[in-house]
Amino acid sequence: MAVERLLEIDRLGRKYPDVPRFIILKLDLLRRGARLTARALDAVQNDAYRFGPMLIFFKGGGSKKTDRSNPGSMLLRDGTTAPVSFEEYFEDPYRVDYQGGKFILYDGRARVDEVDFTPRPKYYGHLTTSGIPMESIASARAQRLIICAYRHCHLWDTGDQCKYCAFFTDLKASRPAFDTPLRRGVNPEDIYETVREVLKEPGRISEIYLTAGMDYRGEHFFDEEVERYIRILQAIGRNFKGRFSSQIMAPAYSKAQLTRLYRETGLTSYCPNIEVWDERLFGWICPGKNKWPGRKEWIKRTLDAVDIFGKGNVYTQVVAGVELARPHGFKTVDAALRSNLEACEFFAKRGVIFLSTVWRMNPASALAGQKNPPLEYIIRLSKGLYDIRKAYGLSSDNDDYKHCGNHADADLERID
Amino acid sequence: MGHDHKTAALASGVVALLKDRKAVKVVGSLNADGSPYIEVNDALTTLDASTLILPEELEKSAGNRNLVRSIWFDKPVTFHVGRGDEAYYIQAKVYRCLIAGKLFEQMLLRKRAEEGADADISVVWEFIPVSVEEVTVKVLRKEQEARHPYFDRHLDRASIKTGSN
Image 1 (cartoon, rainbow over the protein chains, first blue to last red):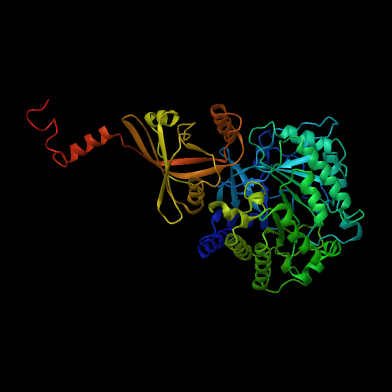
Image 2 (image 1 turned 45 degrees about the horizontal axis):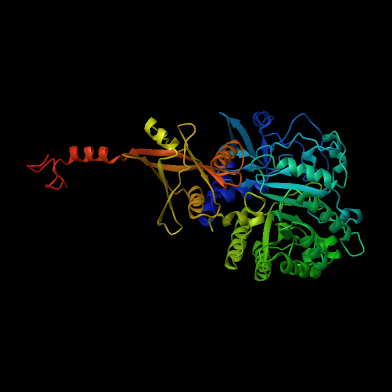
């Protein structure tokens, strides 16, 4: 089985010669996940690799504290980041073993390649003045600091969460993982101190990224959330002399809200994710976003943001594969591909970077139990999105291979 | 996509030149259209006398993009290192690209120690040498003249023409 699969990767590599095998492997890793052997797990229990509990992505509705730590995102030899969560449930994962001082990736019995993991940042293990573990404030990828500004999505309050989503479903279960209980909100001063500590490690971070669950509360939708982001970004900004490379992944804010965010903080990039382009499927898969503020308004606000942040500094993403979900999704990959490429063209014409990330089935999500998107589909999609953006002169600087790692289509820009 | 290439040993002379910051170091790669691209990069070095290390300053430089292409599509990379009369030609395969970690930090700190706190690097490349050839002209001349003793030597040279010292 494993040999057949490797041949499939090889076959697809030959069929799509412009798509490097590293990128095809990454896409397959994101689809299928990976497990560490006991030897590999032993080899990451040290200060070079130990990442500890992650606070965003969870497995089947819960997590528990153990005396073992997971490593950070996987790094392929070409520097490609593959943000595989080793805790998540996958049906047929790759396997990582540790042999001769190196981590080796296997598909079944077949050796695929040597891999490595994102090094543990030096701020891990430090506490803020108020006693909060800094790694509970921010996690790190190879060059990106990820800050979860608010650990609750209000779409779950009314059952309007996105159907593929399992964010924030196990906040309660995660609490034992830290000595200090996690809170929904994060104190901006703790964030300021964490960033200050992060910057003591030479060359470790070149972008700060903020995300959170959706909070639509306020006089106008999202007013409270915008105020929160402004406070946090201003606190972070005390570490810098001016604007600093940064992105928020957030809902579609009004032009007035975006203007404040841009003028009152050092923010450089904004990413309101459309998640699924097709209007009918958007209503089914993202019922909350379809209410707050609605699909047409979401798109309008995304485009408006270009006036404030500039061409190429506004992003939106789809969860690639979810548009094929049963029972209402597209029946063929060609139809799904047409829809996503149409969306990319629509946004690219207007200066917005449209990216894809691979749908990973989470057992805690409403779409649990469905099939992963076919590998060939996401290869075609990645290449198609890359080609369109390139034609419009767009470069995904904030979401490239070293700052995010979720987007194989952005990784392809490395040779441009 | 594995990297099980034949590894060539780096002789002590090559290692010394790679570690010599005053040596001339040239990196040769291939552009997208297959044409050669060369650049001088004196940051090329070795730490273990086995692999070659190249800190790259700019993500979007032609050389860096070519190295990405090399690891993606298995294209060769070549180096020329030399100082004074001594020179070596190295063919190599890209082993890996580092974007964080101990070696990355070590190379960044080295650059900042030399150029100040605002100096920066984008990535660090590691290469496995697959062949090393000495290209010191005196050595090559000796070899050529041993194989072709009367070939391509101007007859007015001092060592050939009578009446010269």
